Image (tube, rainbow, N blue to C red; front, side, top):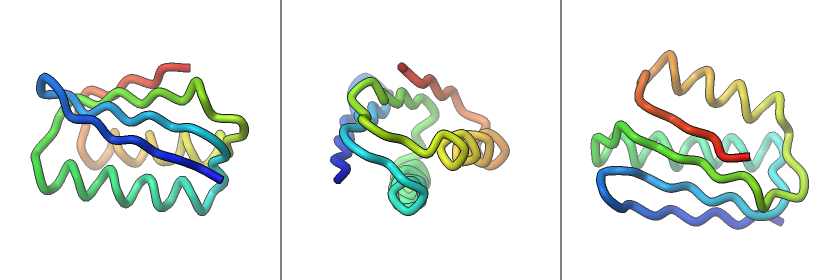
Length: 79
């Protein structure tokens, strides 16, 4: 089970991941992040994955690559 918390503060979107993130969960996460970016025009994102217990790193880093190609904003991953 996964739990994602989105916080917008000081022109930055913080995405806190907690739990298991398999490929399906990462696709849902990507959709939510893209929707927020498109709606609010956010350029700075920090994803904290320290509380993940399991993550599909291939799918996760493919999502980050797609983000970089599509938006090219400032994205930081805290591990």
